[in-house]
Image (tube, rainbow, N blue to C red; front, side, top):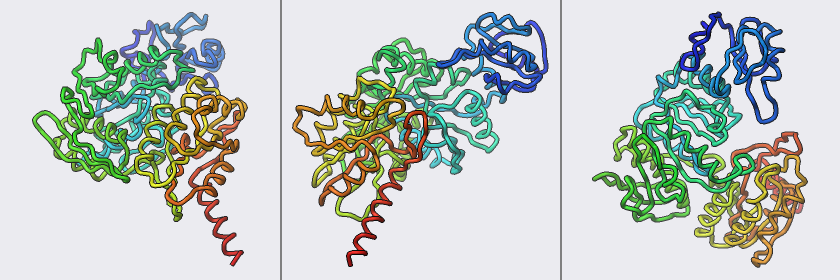
Amino acid sequence: MKLSQLMRDIVRPDFEQDIEGITCDSRRVRPGWAFVCIDGVRTDGHGFARQAAEAGASAIIAQRDTGCPHQIQVPSSRAAWARMCANWFGRPAERLHLIGITGTNGKTTVTYMLKGILESCGYKVGLVGTIQNMIGDRALPSGHTTPDPYDLQSMLALMLAEDCTHAVMEVSSHALDQDRVEGCQFDAAVFTNLTQDHLDYHGTMGRYLEAKKRLFRLCRTAVINDDDPWSGQLIEGLSCPVKTYSVGNDAADYTARNVCPRPDGSDFELVGTAEIGRVRLRIPGRFSVYNALAASACACALGVPLRQVTEALGTVPGVRGRAEIVPCGRDYTIVIDYAHTPDALENICRTLKECCSGRLMTLFGCGGDRDRDKRPKMGAVAARYSDFLVLTSDNPRTEVPADIIEDIREGVEGQGTPYIVVEKRPEAIRWAMEHAQTGDILLLAGKGHETYQVVGTEICHMDEREIVEEILGAGEQEAAGEE
């Protein structure tokens, strides 16, 4: 590819070269490649520019002078990298109907619901998200909620090559802040909600909101949760058309009326512009109604008839790690959920409490090296809605697990909810299962779809489903031995 083509819509280079490859990792540079100096969280690529030049880089893209030959200076090397990746892969987003979902909670479920709705119309749909990436029914591994620009554009190009017409993707605040989706034009973008999370990165809720808002400057239509207290600030100043959704507020474009919760889902009436349809959702919880509304409003904004939306929602299955019921063959129920923020934990605890004939036992921890302020808040929320707590580890990372648990306990103490501390998560799950009673619901919160635990800097395999299965199997062997 010619350098001028690679730098299209970025800057006009004052020299021309044939570019054989692109990278922002100086260790991967080969003769004839372009190297982009990214000022990263941990390292600054500008310090490796000379190394890249010595390895044969034909162009050095930087946002400040590196003293290297064949340098092209840009206002933002992150934004330039994202646009270069789009150009390198032929700008695939321009030939796909691209939909972005952002918000603290609900992104994953909304993407799957929207994918199901669009597929019911006969479209082939790609998905980029936390659990996995998908091309139609084919699953591909996912490393981040929103990939690096090179991996993202490569994925979009692959979707296009395999005849996808639509791509639905989760767009994280980190990705928006780091310009990973720069150069993408979204047909529609959805805002689910904003609650406390990632303040270790963004610092304040205002900056967190501003990161989310960047998505809506890249879209043709915004779909906004009108019930979220941050929605007014999000909508303010947007130049694109806005569609809103709400539970019960008739002023919104799409509303859910007469919501009837069931233990295994919810029934409600979806009311649009001069249209109404009945939905029988297969996923429990009021928060799932909001997710269904988000997917519905977005689908309608893309031109899907409301009748087809309501029919499709009735067939959409649950998502792994989101209010996922784990078969255990016991007289109690085990539920795995990804809830790792105060708001998400409150949502799932309230939902399960409503349909619990016995006790709600909540097992959870908090991530290390992350926002400490939310730990006592999560402890308080869990204590408020649960009958018993098991405090344990999540991903402690480089923090001492006992210190994290002590932060959680600050919110638990004084609320009168009994609890036990079992630091190692597999042991905590075993204790909880051994003490669960008839009619109880045991909520394993925080890990969700994750099949690992980060201890120190090491990623260790840990799948809660496997742990449950092993505990059940050991119990059956002990029972057989007693006979």
